Image 1 (spheres, helix red, strand yellow):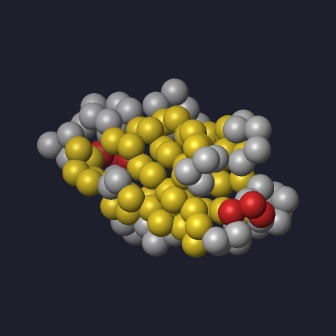
Image 2 (spheres, rainbow, N blue to C red):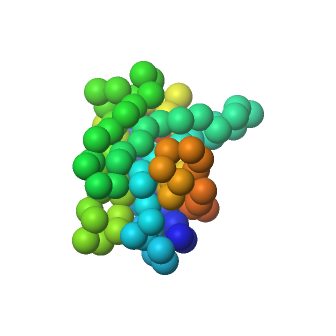
Length: 118
Protein backbone atom coordinates (compact mmCIF):
# COMPACT_ATOMS: atom_id res chain seq x y z
CA UNK A 1 0.00 0.00 0.00
CA UNK A 2 1.32 3.43 -0.94
CA UNK A 3 0.02 6.58 0.73
CA UNK A 4 0.18 10.13 -0.58
CA UNK A 5 -0.73 12.96 1.78
CA UNK A 6 -1.58 16.43 0.53
CA UNK A 7 -3.38 19.64 1.44
CA UNK A 8 -1.07 21.20 3.99
CA UNK A 9 -0.26 24.89 4.08
CA UNK A 10 -0.26 28.10 6.05
CA UNK A 11 -3.47 29.14 7.79
CA UNK A 12 -4.35 31.82 10.31
CA UNK A 13 -5.50 30.93 13.84
CA UNK A 14 -9.17 30.04 13.80
CA UNK A 15 -8.98 28.96 10.19
CA UNK A 16 -9.68 25.65 8.50
CA UNK A 17 -7.79 23.24 6.30
CA UNK A 18 -8.52 19.86 4.74
CA UNK A 19 -5.87 17.21 4.29
CA UNK A 20 -6.18 14.25 1.96
CA UNK A 21 -4.46 10.88 1.95
CA UNK A 22 -4.75 8.83 -1.22
CA UNK A 23 -4.04 5.11 -0.97
CA UNK A 24 -2.95 2.89 -3.84
CA UNK A 25 -1.79 -0.66 -4.27
CA UNK A 26 -3.31 -3.40 -2.09
CA UNK A 27 -6.05 -1.14 -0.77
CA UNK A 28 -8.40 -4.11 -0.33
CA UNK A 29 -6.23 -5.16 2.63
CA UNK A 30 -6.70 -1.93 4.59
CA UNK A 31 -8.34 -2.41 7.99
CA UNK A 32 -8.08 1.17 9.23
CA UNK A 33 -6.34 4.43 8.39
CA UNK A 34 -5.15 7.17 10.67
CA UNK A 35 -3.61 10.60 11.02
CA UNK A 36 -0.61 11.43 13.16
CA UNK A 37 1.36 14.63 13.59
CA UNK A 38 4.82 15.68 14.68
CA UNK A 39 5.48 19.17 15.96
CA UNK A 40 9.01 20.61 15.98
CA UNK A 41 11.05 19.06 18.77
CA UNK A 42 8.31 16.63 19.74
CA UNK A 43 7.53 13.00 19.10
CA UNK A 44 4.93 11.90 16.60
CA UNK A 45 1.48 11.79 18.20
CA UNK A 46 -1.88 10.26 17.38
CA UNK A 47 -4.56 12.50 15.88
CA UNK A 48 -7.31 10.11 14.92
CA UNK A 49 -8.27 6.97 13.08
CA UNK A 50 -11.09 5.64 10.93
CA UNK A 51 -12.09 2.07 10.23
CA UNK A 52 -12.05 1.41 6.52
CA UNK A 53 -15.22 -0.67 6.34
CA UNK A 54 -17.59 0.81 8.91
CA UNK A 55 -16.20 4.32 9.11
CA UNK A 56 -16.08 4.50 12.89
CA UNK A 57 -13.67 7.10 14.22
CA UNK A 58 -11.51 7.74 17.28
CA UNK A 59 -9.87 11.08 18.07
CA UNK A 60 -7.21 12.40 20.37
CA UNK A 61 -8.65 14.60 23.11
CA UNK A 62 -6.71 17.58 21.79
CA UNK A 63 -8.61 17.61 18.48
CA UNK A 64 -12.07 16.33 19.47
CA UNK A 65 -14.80 18.64 18.28
CA UNK A 66 -12.44 20.46 15.89
CA UNK A 67 -11.12 17.76 13.55
CA UNK A 68 -13.16 15.29 11.52
CA UNK A 69 -11.85 12.22 9.71
CA UNK A 70 -13.78 10.79 6.78
CA UNK A 71 -13.08 8.44 3.91
CA UNK A 72 -14.21 7.80 0.37
CA UNK A 73 -13.81 4.10 -0.32
CA UNK A 74 -14.48 4.54 -4.03
CA UNK A 75 -11.53 6.94 -4.27
CA UNK A 76 -9.42 5.08 -1.67
CA UNK A 77 -8.92 8.41 0.04
CA UNK A 78 -9.05 9.53 3.65
CA UNK A 79 -9.62 13.14 4.69
CA UNK A 80 -8.86 15.22 7.75
CA UNK A 81 -11.05 18.29 8.08
CA UNK A 82 -9.45 20.67 10.56
CA UNK A 83 -11.39 23.61 12.00
CA UNK A 84 -10.63 26.23 14.65
CA UNK A 85 -6.93 25.70 14.07
CA UNK A 86 -4.53 26.98 16.69
CA UNK A 87 -0.76 27.57 16.64
CA UNK A 88 -0.28 24.40 18.67
CA UNK A 89 -1.71 22.43 15.74
CA UNK A 90 1.38 23.35 13.73
CA UNK A 91 3.09 20.12 12.74
CA UNK A 92 3.89 17.76 9.93
CA UNK A 93 0.84 15.59 9.46
CA UNK A 94 1.25 11.97 8.42
CA UNK A 95 -1.29 9.45 7.29
CA UNK A 96 -0.93 5.76 7.98
CA UNK A 97 -2.63 2.52 7.04
CA UNK A 98 -3.08 -0.72 8.96
CA UNK A 99 -3.53 -4.03 7.18
CA UNK A 100 -2.89 -6.13 10.29
CA UNK A 101 -6.32 -6.00 11.85
CA UNK A 102 -5.40 -3.39 14.43
CA UNK A 103 -1.97 -4.61 15.54
CA UNK A 104 0.31 -2.10 13.82
CA UNK A 105 0.54 0.78 11.41
CA UNK A 106 2.10 -0.90 8.41
CA UNK A 107 2.33 1.94 5.92
CA UNK A 108 3.08 5.64 6.19
CA UNK A 109 2.70 8.60 3.88
CA UNK A 110 5.38 11.21 3.39
CA UNK A 111 3.83 13.93 5.57
CA UNK A 112 2.41 17.35 4.80
CA UNK A 113 3.25 20.55 6.68
CA UNK A 114 0.51 22.49 8.45
CA UNK A 115 1.48 25.86 9.87
CA UNK A 116 -0.96 27.92 11.92
CA UNK A 117 0.28 31.46 12.29
CA UNK A 118 -0.88 35.03 11.91
